[in-house]
Image (cartoon, rainbow, N blue to C red; front, top):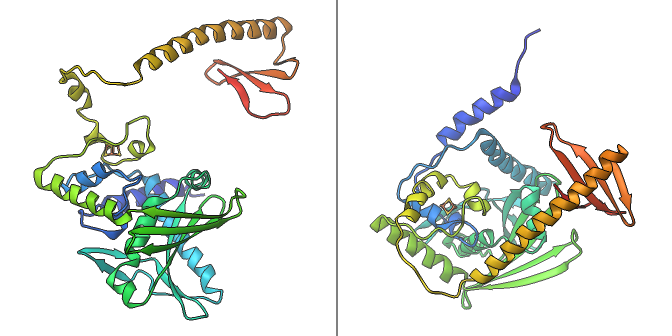
Length: 335
Ligand code: SF4
């Protein structure tokens, strides 16, 4: 029997394709929003920095997303709407883009559809109220392209699919040029929020300013401040320019020689930290008491009133004490 490791073969093929993926920076309508995307990242890209290698798994994940788009459009094609103009090239003020598709309804109305397949974490984040503003900005710019205006396309659907659970969110988007505002509607049943509406002001003003900033930084080979922090923000954790961005941070800080008077919450930080430290001591004492009882009684679960504690040992040999309120799954304490 031949032993074949398809998992590693797929990873190797993906790694080769990922290597070929780097594209030089050019003004793109799909990269207009910087509500969550990092502007500094685009500055690196525009100044020709080569991004860190994409991991095979990230490449596969991105590739999955484009196949989800195909799957969704296949479903739509089975219905009464006409799906067409896939990947139509559009232009606006020297910026280019490719739409996902247009759909034409039975009443003759044509609507832009932009599809985004995201993981469960990102999908749930949206359900908690974080609007996908970068995508909404992108869609509004698409709507104002020469090509879509000529085709009389007045609105768009930003269709978000959760890759893990196959749930969809349907954001209906329109753009008001006179007020520079995006109007967004969402009917969603997953969190029981019902119908929601938002008006986002100054969409284009913000994005054109950001593009000018990128241009100026490119001209002078400078960079904007870091809007996010490594180890604290997912943007840096997934950023392919992080190795450049944080390479000299230690020396930047070492090179500073300035004292400022300001209203930073230093006293609050000092007090909270002291409180946390004293709590750590208390927590240790309580934990020792719980562990003492568990060892004395040779018990893995001990109960008291409305609470019970479960003692487990990890493979590395450390002991976990998790305290639960009866009837609730979430651990109150986890050590
Ligand atoms: S590492 Fe963080 S701050 Fe730096 S460019 Fe990337 S996302 Fe922006």
